[in-house]
Image 1 (tube, rainbow, N blue to C red):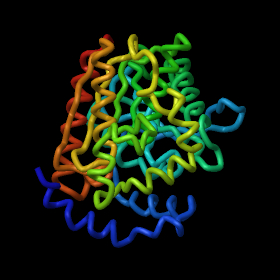
Image 2: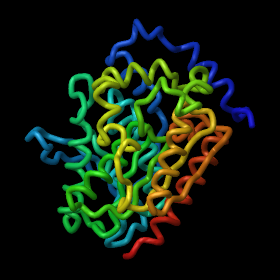
Image 3: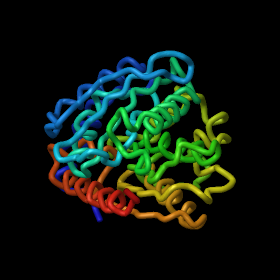
Image 4: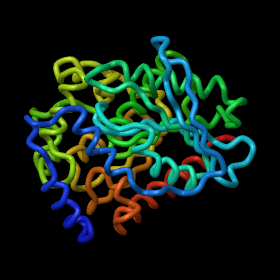
Length: 315
């Protein structure tokens, strides 16, 4: 199956706008990513920005989205944004978080975790775990159901959601009811050939392999990251006892095969797995959904699957 027709022109524009990697800085990458966040999202009953204690004593900003009709104690999704652990913030993922809240009826809590290279691994993991603990411990004040606590994220955020799930299991809490991994990064093995999609989709489909290497260098370097399950969750020695997982992958994504590999690893460990595979999509299709029809349909399918998974959680 080829890439969706309505993505072809967008991919060409994205490639034309790319800077050579030797000219890229975290600041230029952040500015370019923020420029994508121009879509107006779904109306919410309530959107609240607040600051919670971070793991190192610093402030950790979060933003909560309560959709209309959420009820008194809806499920809650701790959302961790993508961006290679180096770019992205609450605003770049405002529209996707609104779409997720509106589509599932859950309260979504977006986390503005610290970014590399100023704050390399494990700062983002520590912040993500601290946010999940805060939401679990303050569920009554937040008006959410702690028994239906979900961790979710796209790309690097999917990596963080998987890492939080491992930490929560190994640290005996908080209890995660579901993990949602949208085209997640779960490994830092760029060269062994274990994941053929890294080379198959190395260029031309929004996320380039050389950009992934740059992100990894910012985050801490593959030598450190590949050996630590908090950075590379697929490297954990045991995946048993993890919460049920929903995984979504795109066919034209360098990360496709490691996402599929992680779903297979969890299923093999007895973890309930649901999978959405969008063979005509590219990395980042959740962001393209408002303006690209095929990406919108793919995201709607993901959100529908997440809604079914949420409905199956004990209330």
